[in-house]
Image (cartoon, rainbow, N blue to C red):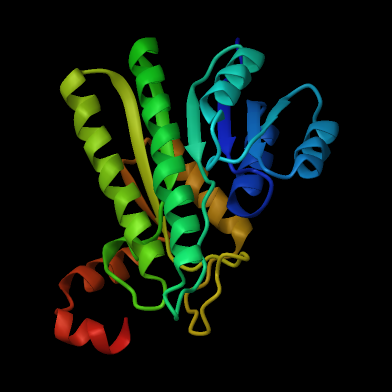
Length: 240
């Protein structure tokens, strides 16, 4: 039986790395990407028979060529996970932070998602996954570009899910919206319901296995998502 193949874009740390380790233990052939060569090589050295890697920055030209090379090394692709992203507080509305956020979470994300969806359409099957955020549900004064970029990801994936259904293709489009996860991305001073990285990775892989269209990590963050959509602007502006 041929091993399943997965590519995780952004697998050198945090959720992406933990997911890579989980899929390796499940005997998948795993393609990993990231900007830090030493971390990619470290994972490859630990699991030389199962892991292939490609070093690139999704904000720079050439991402698609690297992905195509990685698919060739894996001899196929069943699942692609977009875990690469950035999120810095921007209390002073830094243009530099906004640009980096948009270049990574919108432009880089969309290039990879577009390529992967079309790859799966041509192939006739596959699963495309993104790690968005609960922040996608409303604006936030502390990191406005981050919330907007995650809203873009979630809405884009909803559109892809509809497109896959209309095309009648065996393509699963899965959007994950985590709440606070205990990684370096969690920079707020008001954290609650924090999910450890190991647990978050396990819950995400479970949602992928179940072919969910959307999942919250952990499930209780579904409540926050509903509340955020329901809260009137006059209330939101006091806390957001």
